[in-house]
Image (cartoon, rainbow, N blue to C red):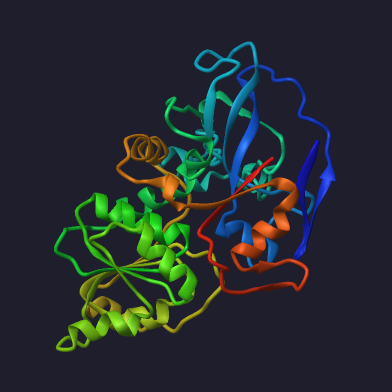
Length: 345
């Protein structure tokens, strides 16, 4: 089978790989129908996020069950499923203390990073990491369950009230999903995106009660009487913590979810004196995957509207270029009028 393989920074190609072996015990073989291009994929390709050389990329996926092991009970051949890629063993110290998203085995089991991912026609996982899709949920929208679950996890770590002044930085799929999750909890706010084409897309897909702005300065100008006007900021860019911290009101919260290596100076005394909270969040936790699937299936979050492009896996370079990743030129740039690009192996 032809799979998209990462070799080193800016080096990836379609390669012939052996099909996974027949499932044993509780294993399930899934024919992948849709895999979203994720910001983590872009970080891996650009060398900003470490991955195992020779790994098959991809982790936002849905498909059909084509084979099951003898111990599988809850799914059967032909079932339409979405794959939770955040493997956890359930036995290590971090798993047993409620940190399954940081399972000690993650260095060998992280789908599309340290273990083969889903940008391939077939992917083998275990029954406990599969969720059956309702008949009305398409494969493409289902592939957004994983990034949505990450947004649910992050939002659950914040202390939220509808009256808080709220900003989401970055109008990519993750930023839009965070805006929708916060909206579902009763918050209104502003999504900030500097790329003009993507900013217009955001205006079409975010909750109508949310504003879309070009810059953080534009948002803060609305509260000219307050030097530090913001209560809750979610930074999906990984680049703006230094700009945000001075603008947080006392008791303000900054959630960091962008996987970029970026250092900023911290005045720890000011953080303590102003009761600021700086929180990181990654992957799914505490049932957020099931919650995300419910939000999509119930129509609370219109995931299908975020999918702007669907391409066969063979056109992966075109798909990456749509989100600003030029593999041949070895550079990341502004997205070319795309939001979520889904590849179809």
